Structure formats: C-alpha cells, structure tokens
Image 1: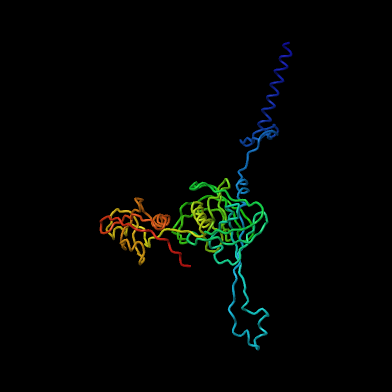
Image 2 (image 1 turned 180 degrees about the horizontal axis):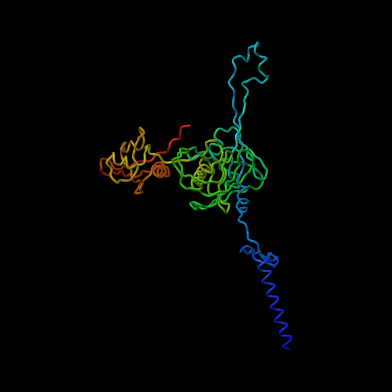
Length: 383
C-alpha cells in the first residue's frame, strides 16, 4: 500500500512540475490560456427559445395615417399675350397653327389629408390658391377631381372636396394640446413629386411665431424632413394621430435643413370646421395696430414695470377709433383677460364674434381707463 502511495505522489509531483514548466515557457500550449494578461470571454449561443429584443418601429403609426394622406396636383391656365406680328403675312411662318395666344398651363404639387369619409380634404391655402384644376391621388391609386370649398390665407389653410365611390379613410385627430417638445413625429406627404413618403423626427419647438409667414402663427417646429411638395401633408404622432398640417420649411436653397413648420391641429380643426360650415372663416376685428412692449419702450413712455401691448396704429372709422382708442395707449386686458403679447391680443379678438361689445383696459397718461368696443368682422386680407 505504501508503495502505491509513493508512486501516486511521485506522479503528481512530476505532473505539477511539467505543468509549471509549460506554463512558464510555453503557455500557448495550454487550453483557454490567458495571453498577455487579457482574458477573452465568449458569449454562448442563444437558446432557440430565448426571446429576441424588439426593435423600435413606427410602422403601425405610418400604416394607420398613410391611407388618409393624398397627393394634390394643380394646374393653372395661363394665356400668353397676343403677338402684334401674328397676323402679318410676312411673319406668319414663325407662328404655329394654334397661335401664340392659346391657353398654356403650369402645374404644381402638394399634399393633403382626408378629414372626413365624405371626401373633405384639408391642405394649405398656397397649394390651391391659383389652381384652375385640382386632381387628387389617393394612397390606394384612385384619382379624382376636386373643388375648393373655401380657404383662409391668414392661417394658410384650405378645404377641398372629392366625390369617389367606395370607402375613404379619414385621419384620426390627436387630442388638442397633447404635443410636447421631444415627442417623436412622422411627416407624411409627396416631396418633389416622388410619391407618398414618410420621414421621422421630433418636435423641436412649439408656438413659433414672428416668422412672417401667416397673420396667425402658432407653429409646431420639427426636424422631420419636409421638402417642397410636403405642403398640406400630415404631421402625426407615434400613434398615427394628426397633430399638425405641414406648411413651410426654413431653407435658403429649397431643401430640408431640419427646420420645418406645421400648423397645429387646434388651429386647423377650428378653421376647417368654419370653412365646411360657412365656406369661409369669420373673425373679430377692432382696427388697431399693436407692438409688444419692450423695456426700452416702457422707459421712453415712462410706463415703469407695466405690462401689455402698445397701440401704434388706429385705422380710420374702425371700432377702436369710434371707442376713443388712441396711438400711444397701453392695452393690458380684454374682458379681464391679461394681454402681454401682440399675438395674444390678435387671437383673443379674432375669437370674439362680430357684434359683441368688449371691455378693453388701457393705460393713458399713467391713468387706467376702460373702453367699450363693439367688435366688427375682420376684413379680408389684401392679396
């Protein structure tokens, strides 16, 4: 027994000695050896039943909204001026048989959104403004002629209508004021006439104004790619619900730079409903031009820390003039609602029905006054 034990211990000792020598002189001969102090870990093959991580996809939102977005093709007839030499037999050779005063045409394109199964489509005013013919192409390939129900240049919105047999898919509206900065959005339209296209981005800013695009501005800014031809298309949220109508881009060369603007659904819905019901939009008006009160203006007019908007213009024979309002007055409230910005004043008065008398609080020569102004209908803008 002792002999076997000595034989075992000698074998183990010799084995450990050989292992030490190999580890010192030839470590690469050892399996799974650590080389140069770096240990490599290998991921085991995933089990057949192991669930794979899901990739984020907005396919559901796109598939929901795309059938309601249409391509709009417009045509404008242009009559070329008559050439004084057309009837001269010496120059007849240079004119074709139709003559140079025959109607010609120019075409443009845009996008629109079906808002009702009855065929009502909302788009931009500038898409259909000068159109003599309007053709609408649906996502399913159907085409139809359209006619204008009404338009509103002050918000750059218009409503057109098509009559087609069969079912029309209408967009789902998002809840008003549910958009937030950072929300993921999709812009759907027909850029450059290539066909219906979906681009993705986020909401970059809200309530953008002072852009000089429309009279009433309250834009959603997005970095989703919007290009010429996208005008009138849909801006939808991650659920495929409509939150805005794509309207404009900021670009020095006509391409997308990641600064696009959409009319929010709150404005679009209110304008659309008035156009469908009455054919136009009716707004209140008092006939006063205003400017926001800057610290410099407050100092020059000795207004201290007062807030409001400064009256800079009074239109002759307007409700404001008849009520006694004057340039230099500081308007700070309408029917007890505080006014701090010119856009707030414009929107507040525009939402008041014509014929209603309002109480306007002003400050004149450091004293507060209340003017009673009967609101009139806002006149149509000059083309």
